Image (cartoon, rainbow, N blue to C red; front, side, top):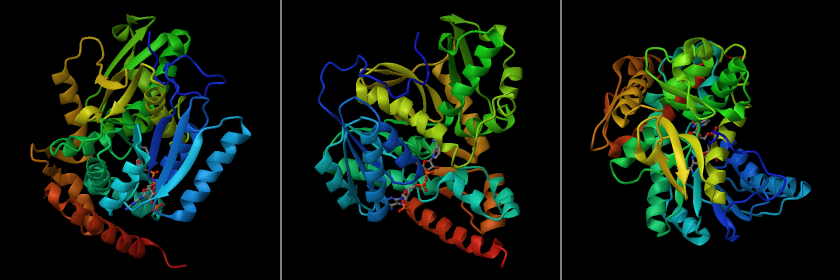
Length: 397
Ligand SMILES: NC(=O)c1ccc[n+]([C@@H]2O[C@H](COP(=O)([O-])OP(=O)(O)OC[C@H]3O[C@@H](n4cnc5c(N)ncnc54)[C@H](OP(=O)(O)O)[C@@H]3O)[C@@H](O)[C@H]2O)c1
């Protein structure tokens, strides 16, 4: 039976790829999540050639050296290097990719990460939080689109794994053939908690419990805070020792324990969970191991699913008895609650009026529909309006 999060650093090289050529992994985006994933990737006896790429030289050099020295201190000897680019310079990013020729490219760049609004004054944060995540889409979409354009220009064909809102970014970019192969986090971040709740309830070891979850970012975000999927749908299947026990469990009662007995550290320190979810995808891909993981945005799909990684290829692997149409409908219901009514076949995004009304009231930002060609201007506008909002809402000392 497969398990959902095989990410612990091994003490000795495990069985895996017969060929021991170092896997070349580029982490593009040197913020909190990118640096965490880079750091963890270096703590392996597997032959790895790692490169951290960011736009601020001092940050990137310090982070790279920290990772190199920590790995050496613990007896790991990966090749660790760095490079610089600004994603707005697609040609330069393409040169960096062509020079390093990554097998795997992990994108962890964003114009404004999810946690930034939590640094507002508390009342201002709570009001803006009510907009949900969908209206912020341009802040994640544009850097990923730039990175994917650079991949295309580079002539290199790495497997691309992206952290920035893959549930919605990937289906939009899929319409123009620029979707990364798969995402990380979101749906995956709740699987260990659900697995622990089931295992404890049934008094079985967690390794015997296999959870398969279908959920959009909206639901993933809600589950750990409220213990339910709210007005959106979710799909959950549970096997114990290979037997489907879903109907024998009181799932609402188990999920309700997530923000209670199974609560976990949140905010920036809590991004350790996201980094572990990233590693659960990146390590099997790097090591040529097959695995059952969870990921959003697989091959351009909307929302999150269980995903089988077989010979380096991702394939959505749904809970027992669920059809692809049912999974898609579940994820669309989450997408709407997140504030995105529709992603049209030409990549135009239609936003939910209720979510956008919050953005308009708080930031003065209004966007009923966004063509892909307008996304960059929209990202710039949100950035400017958010900066002005912070100034307005920050109490003077
Ligand atoms: N899927 C999940 O479960 C999950 C969980 C957590 C976070 N995330 C997402 O992952 C992404 C990264 O999150 P984070 O918390 O690590 O954010 P972060 O700390 O703000 O890092 C974002 C990075 O993007 C870089 N960046 C921005 N514009 C750039 C440009 N033009 N060229 C090059 N780099 C640029 C920033 O560079 P500077 O430092 O130079 O500004 C920063 O290093 C976000 O989209 C976030 O929402 C996803």
